[in-house]
Length: 67
Image (cartoon, helix red, strand yellow):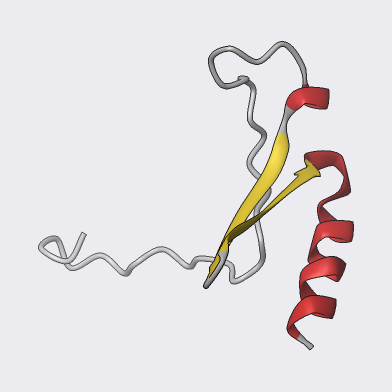
């Protein structure tokens, strides 16, 4: 584009959702998909497994822990 002297395309700063039409190998449905967070600490690690369907709830939990 720059070699031809054409202006760069205007890109919107808004979030553009991208639909995912696949499931990772070994998954049979969205009920098995989880958010996994592992937090290391001196005595081992803390693992959090949260349902993907409630991502906002997971975010609230993390905000509460970090506040």
